[in-house]
Image (cartoon, protein in one colour):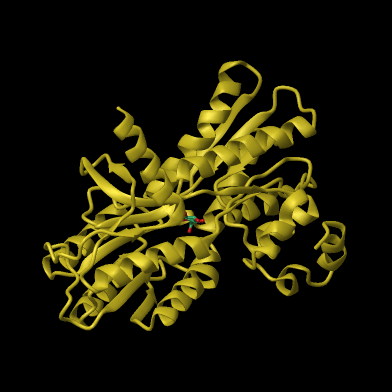
Length: 363
Ligand code: BGC
């Protein structure tokens, strides 16, 4: 028993301090000690969130360069066919580790399985491929992300003293496992309010591919179908939140209807400074990229690391070794945190009319 506790404590410590090496057998997990290590990364698109090109690519590149390892980072631009083609090219060009952000689990699985067959080690980056075969999963605690969004919306509604507010959900892509986890997190907070009769459940819809333009149409329809009676919106990321805000602006309701977000994008943070968005979730992508790069470099060299943690792939009924980082809620009060962390620069955030708002927010 005692030993169990010590072992658990040690595992917890590992999770905080980082990853540990655990042997370097070449046990069929891909990667090879005799090939030149080279890492391939496939990003999903550049429109569903600014993060992929402005943060993930940048931080991954920095980590690979610092380690002096060869790499190739490409973006599938939301095209499933292109995703497969890029993967095929990377595999034939001799990558020894492949990191993907899937566009859906089916396409992701096909790529991961093919890589595995060719002896290429794989990592699911940010999105878990259900039924897939990746050696590792590196992401944030995505249920915790959703919980922060739910709690954030509750606080903003409280601040506005709304009685029995109607709350609408604008969810992420139905093919992104993260969107399911985010919803699990925020619904866990807000459903209790619906059940207690404190809130009224409004429209609840997913946005295919996280497409911002579609989100705007979807929210316009939500707004019309309820006769404009929506008091708060749980939007799953900053892009979707901005689409909702566009509709609210047309109806002079921006700032009066709290809207959530995620990713701490420049646009999301500016919407917060304006008072049009109530919160966002900051995910320190540098940490995510660093952890994934560290694993990819180890795999690419034919080594293995112990993450001290696993997540369950319910479809494949498999425990996937995982690194899950902690997200953080951002409101007007702590926008500064994101700038201090170097995630966005003061120059890009505090442009034009935002300069005064930044000063107000202590930035
Ligand atoms: C990511 C979010 C992102 C969304 C749209 C999710 O899988 O975790 O950070 O906003 O995809 O790209």
